[in-house]
Image (cartoon, rainbow, N blue to C red; front, side, top):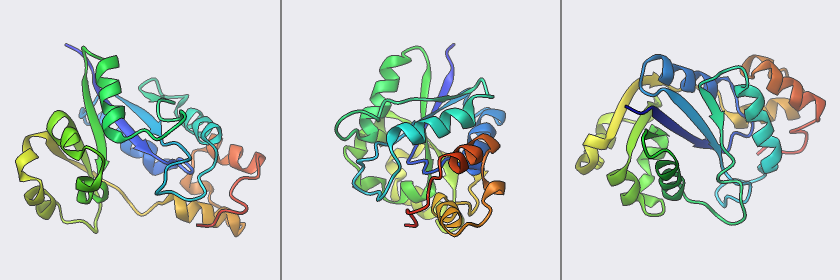
Length: 199
């Protein structure tokens, strides 16, 4: 029997402790055996002022390097736009003997029907839903009731840590250390990042 692999996408601008906490909890609670973080390309049209692909990839690598079950993929860091359904199909082809799970916040689930080929995602993949307080899970399950067998509501909640808040703290010279892995924090300080981007 193969592994259960969670695909965790995002801008990770920067990656913070909540990202790592969610990943480690998914493993500890046996939802998956390992997590692969997949940072989105800086050209992603719905995000403004992303740091370069190389910098965000480097920060994720620093955050994950002490954990054997956490990996980082550069699959989406190529020329052109890569959509989520393509990413999931890529990993299913790469790990044919394993099970692929898409790690998805309830905020993303609420508008996943606006995504490219969203039916491909919902029909052909298992989704691990991370709960957020401001989204009603029952309403979302009703909305996507035709795909309920592929939607797994985890008992993991996301707290209010946000990359936006962290960027603003760096811009305003406030200490963001408690929200970040030590190596990531030191990398940001050393490279003087987030001194202009406060969006």
